[in-house]
Image 1 (spheres, rainbow, N blue to C red):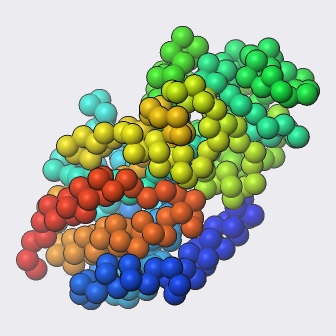
Image 2 (image 1 turned 180 degrees about the horizontal axis):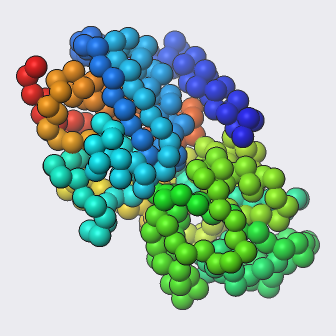
Length: 354
């Protein structure tokens, strides 16, 4: 965990070394029209998947808007959505939209997509580079495959000289998680005959699996457990120096998790009118199939003028410098078409006069 946090801190510092030589005109174009905002504090909670990106956004926005404080707690998408409904926070981060069976916000709200990134299948097996098909991945996480030398894993990796007989320990999220929702959505779509546990922010995992809180918690448990495997966001997997598998996509290609592969998946996913979209198992030979979207959700009508203007300013920052800075902290920016729609949607937030 300490190593992960140290790398996160280094990435934040590195991100803010970029503007002097990389952002240049972009910084001028996106910030010149933003007037100084009144003093305000806005609080958010939710997705740990977007936590690393949000940390950089909050730090950068603070440099421009000294009077505004943005707080964000990464307690999982499910908690964020619940806190938003209960009025505990001003905005929430989530990697999954509300289901019809979820408690719903009592007022009109908006989904704002921010970035995309891979969900890795990370593992702790020394000296092995793995390819995994959806069926094999489903069997591993459902407990049907118990050792790393299983015939199905060998079939996905015919060039591997030797796979160890080490027992597999499956690690999953113990909290309500958008990462879980998107990972299990992939298994449901791509391996319906092998994955029978369903899809959602929580699922009933088999006995013998181990749970951890947050993406960083899963990453740490995989790192500390010989033979472990878990699903971890790209940023935390890299921060923990984990090995991760290339996953077979809808075009039949084994694709390694990367930002270009995530961008390719997002590019191939049509957006709904409310700006929700689904890049999971997206078409295209270059697409990484377990690519997660993520959103900030806010109420459309803002009764507190200072907070409402701060929320709009923060979103405009995300859609300006944020898209340029995203790759420096292991996220990919939005496709141009979706980005244009998201920028336009900020104008739909109404702020009452103070």
